[in-house]
Length: 252
Picture 1 (cartoon, rainbow, N blue to C red):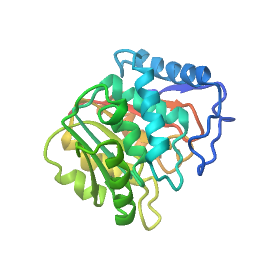
Picture 2: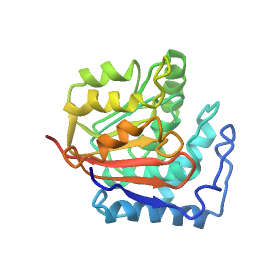
Picture 3: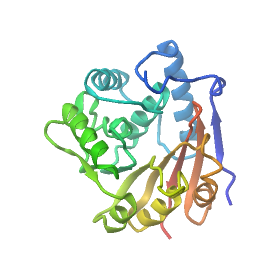
Picture 4: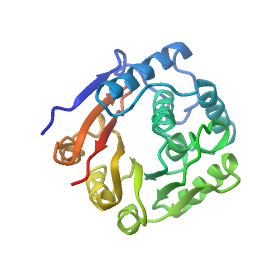
């Protein structure tokens, strides 16, 4: 097992957000940018990202559009995490991005917003958000259409595991944020990783939200992405109380 890299913002334990007030500014803009820049640099040092540059003004345009047009009953995606997800996608520019457990679409658009809407900086081939709850999938669809009226991004109401198993084509970036039913919880990430494994492109990124607050449930998943036979590198990015495990896939 490889020793996973770790990035910890100096104040990640104190950085907290009201989940029902996600657009409230929690710190000076310069500090937010600095914390995320340091996290991106940790990913560069680990060989996961090529650089840390992304268009900050496009990101702010994306953030403003989400705040103005999305119906978000609650979310655990903090402003720092929103910026980090956008930045990773803007830097890597995945041709195909698949996000599972997208709820109302906020987690999905934090990734997809680098390719659609006012924050777009490149053109993707496929952007797919998967949500098992039909009502939330419908809400996500309505939300996403506000930023992407052309329909380039797709919301699918489905169980993520069979969807990933049957997916035609390659995945360049996979984002995991689902909760399994019947007590499965976040441990479902490993099942989703296994389902997606045949479709993962060489050098694909796998992003797993809740790497801190759900670490116990994710023990088997974290063991898998920190296995050098399966992943080149993995970094636990601690910028808030949820965390994000960022892993670079290598095919068997």
